[in-house]
Amino acid sequence: MQVASLLKLLSDFAILAESIGGPSAAQNLKDLQRLFVGHEGETVAKCVGALSKRKPAGDKIESGAIRNIRGRLSRLHDLLLNAQCKKAASDIALLINLLKDCDQSDVAQFVADANSWMTKPQGKIKGGNTELRTDVVAVYLDKLHSSEGENDLFDQVMQSLRVDKRARLAEVREIASKYLGFEIAKKKSKIDALKAIADHQAFNARQIARGENQS
Image (cartoon, rainbow, N blue to C red; front, side, top):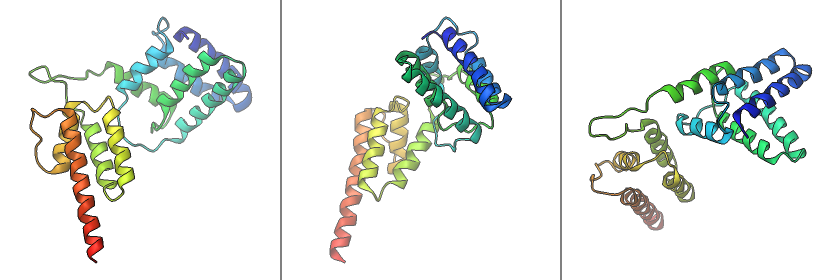
């Protein structure tokens, strides 16, 4: 679906929402439309995909305003599915996922923040290396430390780290260095860094098991 079609769909849905939920419900949908102004010639998948890649990582508490707009979009998603408009429903699902776990106080603030994701340069340092994504490092360090005593949960975190495209070699090496307490050699690959983390956890698990057997 083209963004132009999405804007028309959201505009029509805003009219329906106003008749059911009042002016505030319609205004939230109108505010959301502003996110896509100027991108009418793109597909929704491309536009929302670009925003999702730039969306800051981290575990946040979803605000009530965001939860409400996601709920309304979910109802629109269900209506589209019932009408056999699967492609449109799929694009709305992408938008719902983009809004997930956002903590902005209202939809207008979300739109302002989302627009800044695309205009803010990702940044480069000398040597041409992209800037370290410290937010990704912080999130995974916290998850690794909090799951140390639960092997299954730790394995889930490791799997997520392996497939997370935001966690490049630089981020994984930094995560491993901080988690292990010593710097991982620059010649080490992403696989090597991940293995070092897994080996450390396996060693700790054996130590704990040995202590429990001796007690």
